[in-house]
View 1 (cartoon, rainbow, N blue to C red):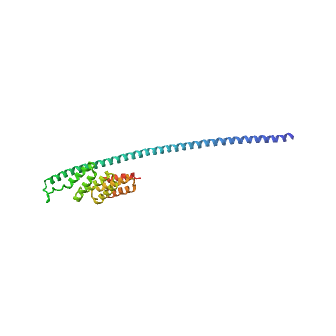
View 2 (cartoon, one colour):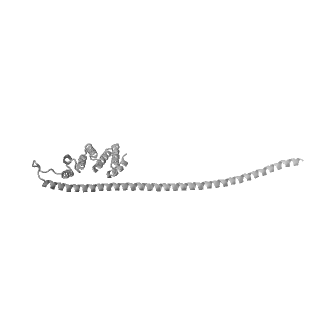
View 3 (tube, helix red, strand yellow):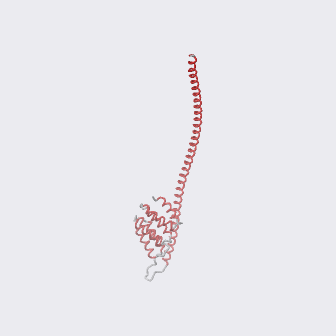
Length: 251
C-alpha cells in the first residue's frame, strides 16, 4: 500500500514533465512560424523600400534633367534676346546712316539752290535751307562743339519750325546736353520732343532715352513709368522692344 502511494506522485511528476516538453515544442514551433513571418514581412518591406528608392531616384533624375533643360532654355533666351537687341541697334544705326546720307544730299541741293537764287531786297544772300542748317549743326556736334551745334539746331527750329528735320534738330539738342552730362537739361528737352513731336519716330527714342537715364540714376520707378509709357504709345517701335527687356532688369 505504501508503494502505491509513492508511485502516484511520481507518475504525476513525470506527467507534468511530459506536458512541459510538449509546451516547449509548441512554443518553439510558434517561434519558428513567427520568425518565418517576420522574415517574409522584412523581405516585403525591403522590396517596397527598394521600389520607393528607385522611384525617388527616377524622380530626382527627372528633376535634374528638367532643371538642366530650364537652365539651357534661359541661357538660350538670354542669348537670343541679346542677339535681337544687337540686331535692332544695328538696324537703327543703318537707318541713321541712310537718313544722314539723304540729309546730305538734300543739303547739297539746298546749297545749290541758294547759290543760284537772287539776293533779297536788302541784297543779302538767300538763307540756307533747313537741311543745310541741319548738316552744319551735325558737323559741329560730330566735332564735339556741343554748344555751337545746339545753337545751330535751335536756329533751324526757329527759322523752319514746320520742317521735317525739326524733330531731329530738337532731339539732337537734347543729345548735346547729354554729351555734356547735363542730365536735367537733356531730360527736359527729351520730354519736349516726345510731347511736341509725338508723331515723329524721335518721340519714342526720346522717351527711351529718358527711361535709360532714369534707370542709370537709380530711379527705377521713373524708369519703369517711362518704359511703360513708351510701350503703350509706341508698341511696335524698336524702342518698345528694348523697353520691355529693360523693365525686366529694374529691381
